[in-house]
Length: 134
Image (cartoon, rainbow, N blue to C red):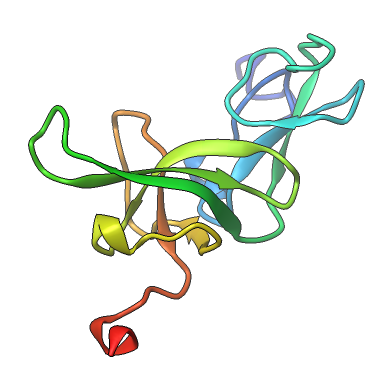
């Protein structure tokens, strides 16, 4: 038995395993000042490395969205999403046309989107269909 297997899961700056992340969106909270952040090694406010892993309580809200064509030549969406715990995540929103993502839309982690590049991918909670535009 290794020494690591006996350690608690709430280690310093450790992201939760993928199995736990499926239940919701995982972020870190500083044990010293309580600031929430995403993918940080140090707290952005007090620079503490004592971060605990938590799950977000609800859907994120799109605060910025744009359509880009660079790199691949195919239009895709790049957005900034704010969560109820008051942190912002840069991400890509899939499952709908890039121009159909609006500021104020509720998003959740995309189901079945396992991305090896480390890119964060969300989907709209209530996507607007073509019938909504008529």
